[in-house]
Image: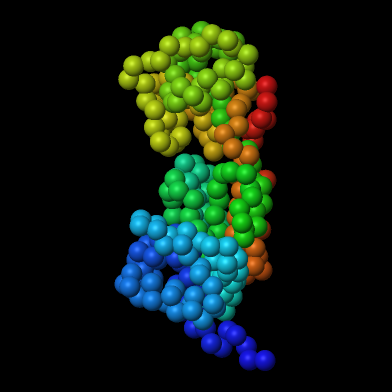
Length: 305
């Protein structure tokens, strides 16, 4: 029997994969750099060859049929494996390791330590991407990611690094101005920096039923590093990670009045495509990160009172 794949161009399957994933012929055309008409023609030809409708065409969108859903699962896995295999075959030992992570983690934890990794691997350049969105490692050309979350992402192998929790941080001078902050309830009248929601979670964890009034003009930033920078400047008390700001705590620039923390996610993880776990540059970075986590400045990172 002839191989059915010999009659179906790879370009048709790649087009179907994009359209199924994006749920739009127009978006698939933009991603592939072709016209919407070309995508529509490829999909129609594939449907005719298979004898099944793969999409339901609606006025403003397309949805997968049962046959389309079955094929979409297979093509997504096939494309992922192809990307990984091609990346491995074309890997250059003197190439580039592409890392994506959040800006606060990059600034406070990763960037200060990357010099040691580059000294150990002088022929390997590092490209560091920061942003709030979760990048698609396979499709966007990244080798590894350090991200917060559950640690469960389809197609990725994840290694737990450290907790994603926060606790009140301030300068020694601010602590003294606030009477020493011997009780969690003492923070009710303090100038608090950051989200009301996260502060409410912390007060609940501390067993404080009374809540502070929202302070007009208080800084609420998208990045934790900006809020803690305001605390370092003596503007108040911010919620920050005792891991990411362990150096400032160890140096005495910040103090941690209470051991109580609240978790933001299940932790920070190193993630990479499972099928690329043996790629040399990924394996080298994985081994280095694990060692670096063990060498971080000592600061209590307990997750409960």
